[in-house]
Length: 463
Image (cartoon, rainbow, N blue to C red):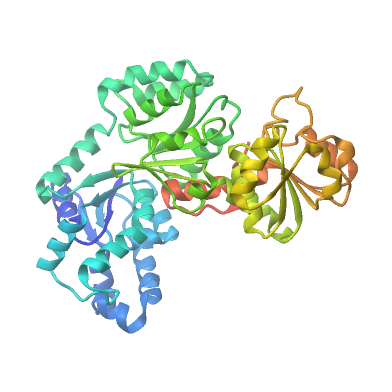
């Protein structure tokens, strides 16, 4: 039987629930914190205070790597989710349950079972601070979430066993949602896979869905990449296309199917904000666009990873003079990245009013396209969709380019766009949209699953 792993904060019931589940399934049980104390002969607070957290995490990493791989139930320490190496080990061929409870409940439980604080803060403050610090990581770690706020360990264990047997997709939603997928442009072999997942007797009721949403989005490489990554890391997920002109329909299907996450592409990166509970207060909020949605532990949360995909290939150009073509959702992420690199940025758009609006948001300049030659940019970034279709015109005429420029086209399908072809013919340094895709997908996978995939691995797996 696949391994069952429990994660979550102290006081959520991982050990008690894990023991009950193990007993009812006839499986062995292991508690990683107990194993650490047994191997070192010291308590965890003693290791923290005498050797420091870094040393404790190193010991924890070794213990996690050595845990049984099958036929066992494992309870983990509250901070195990912070380390991508731990998540890679714990997630492989396993089902991960994150147990959670509200602040008052955790405080009451820990008051009854006191142990020395790890931070030096009063108990309630320590709980609040560490929960906030770990929240994103718990959401990424979870295949399934169980709220133990008002449950006994026996009731929580029963919910776990029910999920293991039936999964989390309500039966009444399967046929209507399958009808939704048939209306999209999904390859027949992928539809066959969805039929098996959403059928009355699925091969594995624990398989969960992730996908890309947009209109159009059938060109996306996401399904090929993510499904290859699921196989590589032993994750029980399937990634597909959620293609429909109506975003509200897509989001309803996603919720009905208990989807773990969505990659969001044009034209929904801004509109999707109205359909989720909260957005990351850093990049996504400032950019005003979301390309990643995580559904986990009764919350939907939006992030923007596009800017990371733009920033990384341009790190060596920090401080350059840049022109950004376009003023849509993708342009907002690109502008954020360019400003973060201390570039002198001018935004050009066919509708100057939109360029002006975006420029004012990020403290950039804006201009008419006719001003391109006067700007004499070192870096040109295309954030428009021009280049996705064979008959698209260039976003900027080739005669305006010169060999001293670096041209970065964020369009990644096709891999070599007409703009990249024209720039190479002139002798420009070029960066294809594939590099942007790799950077944002790497961060997106981490937000989805807590695993840090090497960029080289993504590059090798891309079709």
